[in-house]
Amino acid sequence: AEGVDIKGVSVLWALCLPAFRDPMAMERANLLNMAKLSIKGLIESALSFGRTLDSDYPPLQQFFVVMEHCLKHGLKVKKSFLGYNKSLWGPLEMVEKLCPEAGEIAASVRDLPGLKTPLGRARAWLRLALMQKKLADYLRLLITRKDILSEFYENSAVMLEEEGAVIVGLLVGLNVIDANLCVKGEDLDTQVGVIDFSMYLKNDIDDYRSEERNGQIAAILDQKNYVEELNRQLNSTVQVLQGRVESLEKSNSKLIEELAIAKNNIIKLQEENHQLRTENSVILMKTQQRLEKRSNLFLNVSVLKDVENELVVQVSMKQEMEMAMKLLEKDIHEKQDTLIGLRHQLDEVKAINVEMYQKMQSSDDNMGQKNDMIARLEEKTNQITATMKQLEQR
Image 1 (cartoon, one colour):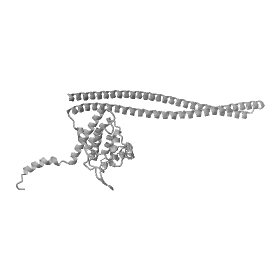
Image 2 (cartoon, one colour; image 1 turned 180 degrees about the vertical axis):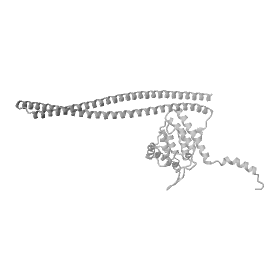
Image 3 (cartoon, rainbow, N blue to C red; image 1 turned 90 degrees about the horizontal axis):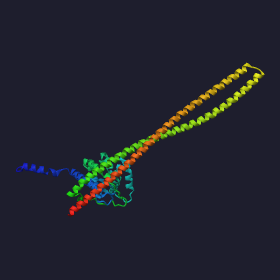
Image 4 (spheres, one colour; image 1 turned 180 degrees about the horizontal axis):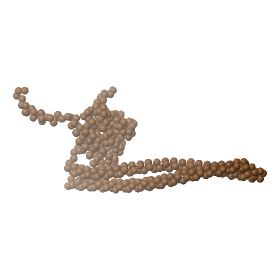
């Protein structure tokens, strides 16, 4: 080591330290920045576009390319009978096990006749999830399961690090976009995903427009979140009221059945009572006839006592029947009162339903006002754009 300048070596080593930074960390940072630019540019251009996006929209195509690079980062190489490959479809296919709603997308992807490669299926899955406005929700469920992702990704991959969570959070903003993508018939197996950096190079005028659009986007998102929260509250209230109505209807039907049974029992008891009264009157008539005959022929004290005892028994039976009739009538009145109370409750629930329906109609009117406000904002944006073009031409 004789003749070596130790201080110079130390300074040179300190200058070279940034060059030896973790390459995977640099890749994650670059992908995160590209995802931010892509998502932001897509939202801004889609709101300016003002219509439903299709597959040929360039910012949307670039978004899928960037997402594909993010999801491919750190994929493990899988060995198959055809050789070694990196399958992006593997982790996306696991989403349906975490969320049953994703099963419909996965089944649709498997049934598409034109897809032959796992990459094509993954690209179709991303497009269907975006149209469903569930892309952020599905990927959020996926990144929470590190045990599942570790089977497909290296430890330093985007999906296993903090950058993945940030990207998934940014994807929530895409819920304001309406897209109608024709996946069937599109060649998703052989597409070459190249990032077009020229789309993200902006001048000062673009920065000014971006700031203004960011303010408009924030206002629109706030209004959208308020309306969605109001709709969720109304839906929950309607569900609670529907549950109460169903329970009251069940109770009402049960009471109606019990009332019908009670009426049938009353009819039967009335018939039995009428029959017993008829028999009792016949017995009394026969007894009186016998008494008259026996009193005329000969006065027999023992026979008169037997007749009196029989009369007492008949009178007691008649009193018991009358008591039973009174108890049944009381029970019927109580059930009728209960039925009237339940009908009042049902009328109150119906009135509440009418009130909730009116509130939902007023909420729809507010949505119409907010759509008019959004249209005025878009008109203002178009005016500013035209003014800027005139300034550029001058």
